[in-house]
Every structure is written in C-alpha cells, then in structure tokens.
Amino acid sequence: MRATAVRHKHLKLDQKKIDFAKRYFGVHSEQEAIDRALSLLVEERQLVVAMGPLKGNLKGDRRPWPYR
Image (tube, rainbow, N blue to C red; front, side, top):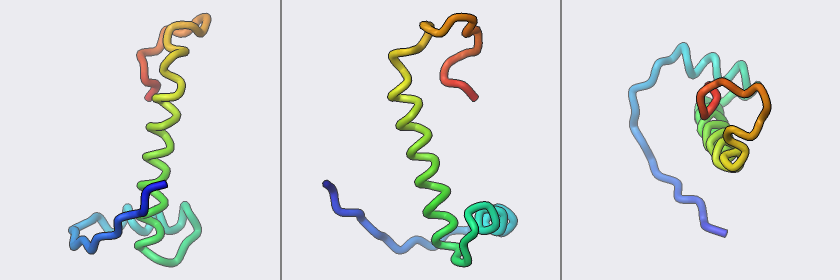
C-alpha cells in the first residue's frame, strides 16, 4: 500500500460549501469535511471505472455513460 502524502495547502474556498459538507458528513472540522468529500469523489470514480465493462449491456439502458 502507498503511504498517504499530506501537504499543506492554502486555498480560497466557498465557505457555504464547506459548511454544507460539515453538516452532511456530521463532522466539526473543515479539514475532515473536505477530506471526506474528496474521498467520496475518488470512490465514485472507482465505481464508474469498475462498472465500465457493463456499459451497454443493461437492457433498456439509454442514458449516456457515465451516469450523471
């Protein structure tokens, strides 16, 4: 397994989005909310890639791939 690289970043972010993420994930820390949101994005991408072989094999499937 790879070691996680942690870097200090100074970013300008929308506070409303951070507050929403804190409430959504039920955390108190802005850093944890952002980390969980990014992890969720990575997991979603892994699912889309894993489901790639099913593309076009689902009956009645007329939506463009990947689903949005």
